[in-house]
Structure formats: structure tokens, C-alpha cells
Image (tube, rainbow, N blue to C red; front, side, top):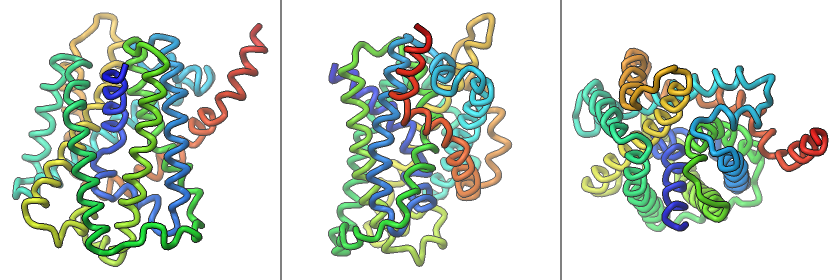
Length: 344
């Protein structure tokens, strides 16, 4: 049970902690000053939403997200949100690929080379289907989380930051809702694809609470660190490098590698949602790697817009659009019990 719980935690974190998150761009877009309570609420909302989605997918033994979406969004809106999820997965995976180009520039690689490396590896990891992704995440995510926490804790210690100094100032608490909503659609897509692989309720509870706590702690420390460099964030494509500027070159190199790994795992998670949904459309089942290959080819021309431009425009837009799904998930115990009584 614990091994599978760790696999699901890695899958969820891999879908959530991507280029926008690790770079700091996504956190700064939604949080910033007076957001401590918002992050605590996000942690709780995220865990609860994960639990609802996983329980539905487990109960239905799903292999793609459509049956889960039909229950959460309602039959009348299923087609609308099905299209929205596919568009979301396509554009956010494209953002990850664009982010790999920005990360590659740290190693003095051309933007196009960083994109090409990630694109090729995305196809290769799906040669073994879902199991290839689960295995990769299980090794990558612990290194990513520990590495990011080490940098943030070291920065907090070196700068003598008081993490709870401004706890009474919480005017931005409403940011918890769009930020949680932003991360909901990929969760439906990813967790809906593994419902037939989950073995029991215990591993669902462990993985959902674990991911919520992990994201809450990292987000709070990260946001507190970004507040200290608010004046210079606009000068950096990737805010994380503003924190790293006083660190040794070796640490900058290490975090650059972790940033690329975060990009890769999130892009792979997005591809999982796309591939499993596309497979359900096809009369004859095609290999996952072939669907991923075609998807990458369609995404490449759009990566020219740049990483920060795509994040700053698309993420808030999706966060607002996804508020309906978030509301349905948070009120699931109410309307699901009503529908059960009504259908009897």
C-alpha cells in the first residue's frame, strides 16, 4: 500500500510541480504579499479535491478521465469541459516544453535545443506506457522536492527571514480558490487515467494528505522567500534564479537540472492525460508513444511565444474558468448524497 501511495503522490506532484511552480513564476502570479492563509487553504482544498477525484476514479475503475468528468461536471457540461481539459493539457504541456527551452539557456544551449531534448524524451518515456511514467516519477520527485526545500530553507536561514512575521495580514486569502482551480483539470485527467490501478481507499487517503501537506509547506516557504526579492523579480524570466544568485555555481547548476526535471515530469503527466483520452476516441488502439509523438509535433510551433508570456496569460485564465469544477468538488458530499437519494 505504501509503495503505491508513493507512486500516486509522485504522479500528483509531477503533474503540479512543473516549470511554472518550481521557477516561482506561478506562485508569484497568484500569491505574493499577505497570502499565508491562502496557501493553507490551498493545501486543504487540494487534498480534498484529490481525494474526491481518486475515489470516483477508483470506484469506476477508469482508464481515462471522461467517466470521472461526467460525474463531477454533470452530463450537460461534460463535452464543454472535455474540450477544456484537452485544451488545458495541450497548452500547459506546451508551456512545459517552452520552459525546457528557457531552462536549457542556463547551460548555454539554444532555446530550440532544450525544447528538442525534452520532446524526444517525452516520446521515449511512453514506450512502456503508464508504467514508464510511474517509475520515472518515483525516482525524480523525491530528489526534486528535497532539492527545492534545501535551497529555500538555506535562503531563509541565510537571510534570517521570519516566516510568520506578517501572519495577521491576510487580505489575499481569496487567491486560494483560483490557484487550486488552476491545478484541478490536470488532476482529473491524470487521476482519471489510473483508477483501474488503485487498489484501496487507504492508499488514496495517504497520497492525498501527503501531497497536500507537501505542497502547502513548500509553497509557504517559497512564497515567503519571493516576497523578500519582490523588487527584482521583474528582471528574471525565472524568479528562482533571483534567490539562487548568491549561491555557489554548483547549486545553481543542480537546481537548473531539477527545474528541467520538473518541466519534464509535468509535461509527461499532461501527455498521459492526452494519450489516454485520445486512445478512447480511436477505434483501433494506438501505442501511447505514437500519440505523444504527434502531440509534440503539434505543440512545437507554439512554443515561440516564450515561457513567462504563456504562464502570465494562460494560468490566470484557466484558474478562473476552472472555478466551477472546484466548486463542484468542494461541495461533492452535498450534491452526491442528494443525487443518490433522488435516483433511488
